[in-house]
Length: 486
Image (tube, rainbow, N blue to C red; front, side):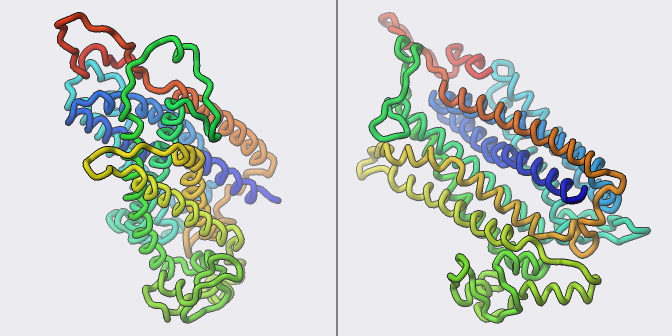
């Protein structure tokens, strides 16, 4: 093992950690903004309670995402200076737009939203949250556009061993980016939807006095037992239904954009497509391998080219062609990792979307408009399915990045030529250990904070007996103060 191997491990570890927070932030921000919009339009109290409850979860996750993202960027100077030198003139524009436009838009308006609950008009306060959400999605766009350039470099020329950008618009409208952005953003909504589904399922069980195991009651805190609280019976069913709808719609977008990405892979990154299918030789009417030895004839060609008889290039034949074009080298990525990452991504993603469709059917309204209660077994299934979308999106990242190897920039710069020349094995090992421990502590800290907040649930006002003739307070008056959240 040398410095290159450890540098790759370090970047992979830190990126996986960071990628645990980013998709949840993107999708959960939109979900919270939708809840607050529903409260603004209807005035129903449970929408406000849900906004504050999931808003706090969103803020915890956002803070962790910022911290892990800053640490991750240090590696470009420490371990990948040759890569930074080559791509710096191209990456500078989209990353500057991400920092100066998207991130400042996101952070500024998020701060106004946090501290503006009782200081800003309701419409302005809601607009602040939507501006922050738009900023987070713009941030994703610029970063994914930069990443897409590594897979399909356009709008540049190489001068004195460095890539120089000649067309910013071509970089930002790269065909790979236009397919990758909706795919990743929609997958982020699936992750957030799965998270909310699990939280809602847990709260439904808890308020019914049930545990994750059938027939096992939950442990109730003293506060819950002694303080009578006014319940909002539709609150968790409402949050669950909204998350189920978001997950089902986002799943359809993931499938459609994934189909487009597969067609682009056939043209732009044929080795990644061949590795994902374990296809060794060029094949007309290529089959799709569900698992080793289990194939569907012609399905891979149909998916990759919308033609069941189309030819798909194979790993060994691509290797031979690359050797003639770029010189002797090993151009084959880690086949088992790429092969199984693809199947885990599809399998766990489909399971999450299937859960959402099942939930929408189970909780549909009966004839006459009465709502069907959420079955106990389905609520337990929602909680147990919590890790599925996160595993799916991380597997997709592994497929995307490991499948591109041995290139950091497809056809231009190999990974072995990207590492910093003056960094020793010991130096990378030390920073790898430090970052792994640091990120592990942060992950545990976030987990503890999230679990603690989910168990506590939203604060509900105590049951009070109103004097005779008293006029009930409006849901948005002082009894719903922002201190419930902050």
